[in-house]
Image (cartoon, rainbow, N blue to C red; front, side):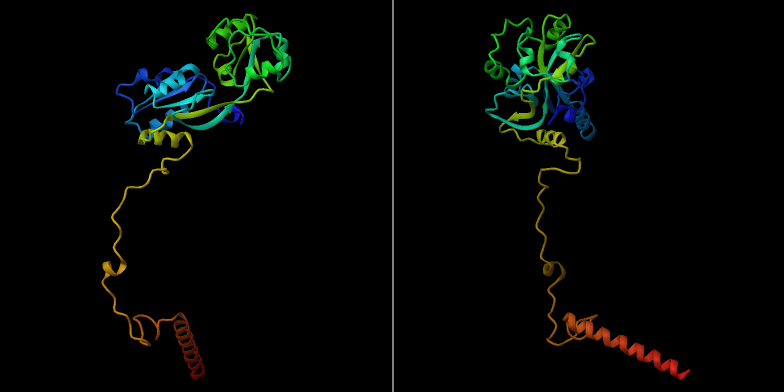
Amino acid sequence: MDVQDEQIDPSEVSADDTEAGLSAPPALTVAFARGVNPGKWARIWSERRPEDPLALVRVDLDEQRDTILSGRADVALARLPIDREGLNAIELFAELPVVVAAKGSALLDQDTVVMTDLVDEQLIMAPLVLGWDERASELGFPPAAAPLATDPESAIELAASEVGIVVVPQSVARLHHRKDVDYRPIDDLPSVPVSLVWRQGRDDEAIEEFIGIVRGRTANSSRRAAPAEAPAAPVEQRQGKRRKPAKGASSPGTAAGTSRGAQLAARKAKQEALARERRNKRKGR
């Protein structure tokens, strides 16, 4: 699915939402890939659990796995590629791969581009998208020159100076957007999934709660089982053992017998008797 349909907000999370402002140890620490905005989910958490602080930590691609395995974060909103050995993962949405170029570039004359449009362009940094190397090899692209930058913000600043192009997920292009650059989707590259990941064996209540928030469960719904209760006593135990009526006898409050047919027959007979009584009264007037 397109990130435009699923992304919450292209803006960055504010400093107030990060761990720097916490006065108590966080109940949960959430790492998030550059450009992914966890703000909505963090706000829902704070509304539901105001007594349990949540910390946010931004990480780049090469830090995502270690951040979880080292315990620096409990869960991560991670962008592929990531080695999933030892991790649980739930895919949330997918982002478009885009090329960022200086305003006025011929690449921006069309709504979308394909890889062959980029063959003669200078890559400022290694692309942060899936499938680039394989596709470039298929198309016979020359070997990439040494990167001029490793940080997307710096790379996009160089792109604004017409040094070259930057290939990143759409949310990263939005995060570091400038007036002197623009971006276009790359049609023949796969989308870039973003997943919620956490270490296998971690199934504590705080993680379950955050998973529920991200997956859209309401405050009144939960995957966790309700607390066990003592089994209810059988009806006869609670109310005393009832004596069975003798066969053919009337039960209290019912017509003779206990079958539904007998009750209906008695009701019909009573209605007919009342009707005859009313007719007799009218005749006697």
